[in-house]
Length: 401
Image (tube, rainbow, N blue to C red; front, side, top):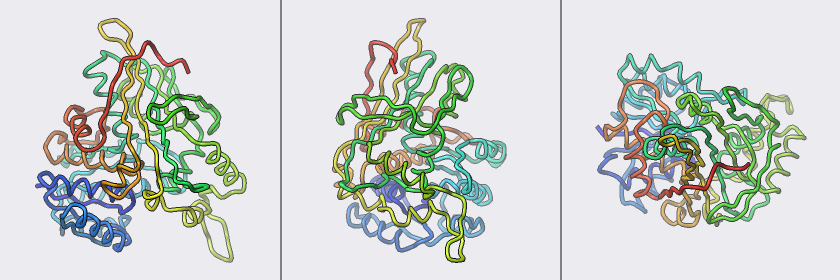
């Protein structure tokens, strides 16, 4: 069966279903569902115009397990691709277990009322999915996702062990606006304002958010300031590659972005706890999301490139080696192909490729799996074919920062 149900009609969902429709030999039947059906209908119209493929649409409150189960059964899907909000991961996993279908997402679960990024909640489903004979794939975006597959590919083909890994995420795009996030504002700002953490010598090292800055020369983009942050793949990589001594994640931000977020945080607009306003409870960050530009509408405005990759140091036959593996993606090329900017593209394409691995029978072992636990080769081949070509080079030595 190659029927798939995609939940979530944001920028990533739009890219994913466009790319699925371009691969109809794998995805024979696609249904796109969201709380707001009109968003799904708009995406379906774009898919029909650009690709010539009809996809089905449906209204769905993904927090309603019974409704999700009913839609899974109605569509006959064998795989649910969860591109909704991370708060919804567990209820969608519950629905997949009840309906007897496989599961895939792009971001780990986090509670709605706490900016806490941990895989523990989803890893706790391991026995449930094993006993049901079902597969759950976690984090099939770019970071996490491709960055984890990069690490697995390097370990399989270039190194015996990994000692250090630095993940570098650079968005060199410019949309001309004073302030806008390049993906869901609520999730983006929660990540940016959270404490930084990295893995070093068997423990987590914590530092204040946006406190550690390094300038780095990114191919195709130029020099950018990147900041040490916490990102969920650090947890899974340090767990599944226990020989790792240090794992860090870096993301670039311009000074204007940092200044805006600092002001918003100082005046309480990034709070995720409810406050009373005119007799009603509101969550400031959700209100902020409503007034900020929608990242899904920025494709036509955004120019420039992204550059995301891993710098990995380890040993091969007792000799230390360092490799830099990365993808460079052009915002304008993405918009021309699927009507999206590159940040959505670099997440939506790996979601499609990960789903293809399940439907092609490559990733079908029962249980809950992170990307670095799976065979990387066909996934890496598909990246080169479907819009995210990668390069790998050997560096003179480990990073100096």
